[in-house]
Amino acid sequence: MVFDYCVIGGGIVGLATALRLLESRPGASLVLLEKETELGAHQTGHNSGVIHSGIYYPPGSFKAQLCRRGAQATIEFAAAHGIPVDVCGKLLVATDSAEAARMDALYERARDNAVEVERLDAAQLRRREPHIRGVGALHVPSTGIVDFRVIARAMGESIRAGGAHVELGVEVTGVTEATDAVTITAGERRFRAGRLVVCAGLQADRLARMAGARTDFQIVPFRGEYYRLPAARSGLIKQLIYPIPDPALPFLGVHLTRTIDGGITVGPNAVLGFAREGYCKGSFRARDVATYLRFGGMWRMARTNVRTGARELRNSIFKRGYLRECRRYCPELTVSDLLPAPAGIRAQAVLRDGSLVHDFLFAETSRTLHVCNAPSPAATSAIPIGEMIAAKLTS
Image (cartoon, rainbow, N blue to C red):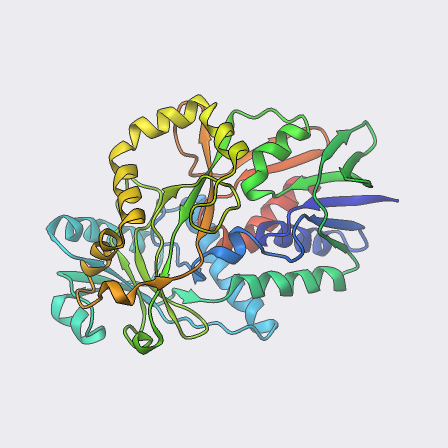
């Protein structure tokens, strides 16, 4: 059998793409291949669970539009499938005069992006969140929380209900393109499709090269390490608490995040990973490390970010350094409050000149389309991202 479409990758972007393909091409045949035994096993299932508002991105930018559309689409999808969502809002807290200046700029950006925002002074902040300290804050009421792994499972069920095949535990080992179809090899199994779309996340560069697509980037894994607060601290915050981000960095900083199950997580930081899919501390895979050590862009990136990298590594090794980041806005936290929690790993595309890719990055051949970088927050924006990818395939 030759399927009309094959999607490689059972993360939320691949699932959203498959859903949109089935919606836009009723009756089309589709197979989705995922190497793990469950959907959403990697970046989708190891993030903070935040439905972002789109406040951070340049006004009018594609990322800002996708985030706002994606947040609404995620909430609507969850409601349609009985998935718990809490639109609890968040506070971006400035702790000194430099952050206050950045907060003012972020306030204007939010207004330009049509994101509802309220400016709070120190007294108003303390009334809203008695355990949080700062010189001021921005209140963004549209931010929410959800379990994206549950969203992924529901998407998988919808794909199956639409007549598609979802194959789990299928690791792709070869991609061969001919004039009439693409053959995807997975061990002893073969799948043929008219068009192939690859949403492989942490393995995106390898799958692109496997298919013969031209690539000028490398996926570099960054571990986002989290802690969780003890159950006795579950009432510490009513909303999510974020620092004012440094615009020079692609990460949002260590924050306090309520989770949909009633807990609170602390994090993430951002440290270089030694295994693309090694979530346990100390994970090491020689192939993954050797791959990026041979890549010139990795060394250029490292030289540019050596001070930030050293700070993040120090905070990873020494819990008190990590705690210091949190105590800037929540001074009552102690070392004993930071309990172990699962880490996440971000697939960061790095170009040969050492620059980090902050936008979409695609690679193509005649019959394949590779999503090499889906910019953060990809989980929030997944549904409109899937629509965009499907449109590229069907146009």
